[in-house]
Length: 79
Image 1 (cartoon, helix red, strand yellow):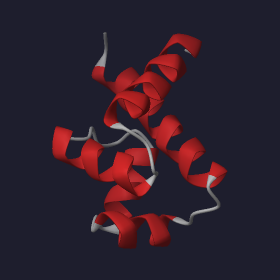
Image 2 (cartoon, rainbow, N blue to C red; image 1 turned 90 degrees about the vertical axis):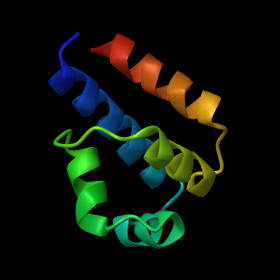
Image 3 (cartoon, one colour; image 1 turned 90 degrees about the horizontal axis):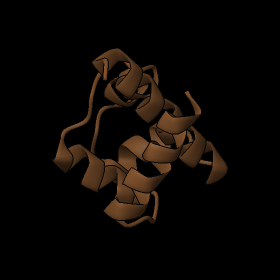
């Protein structure tokens, strides 16, 4: 599987989960301690997350890491 496709699917997942919760990138940045520009790169598929980043995102989005991965897998299947 191509890493570009994976990055784009993960980015769409994070953007959808963030907007479903009415969070801005700035608010998610504050909650995760991640730079807003890094979040933008994640959402646009230009960066791939580390496990640590995924854990921070899941916690800030009030999800288990397993649920975050499931949401990502569903998005990847839609491709």
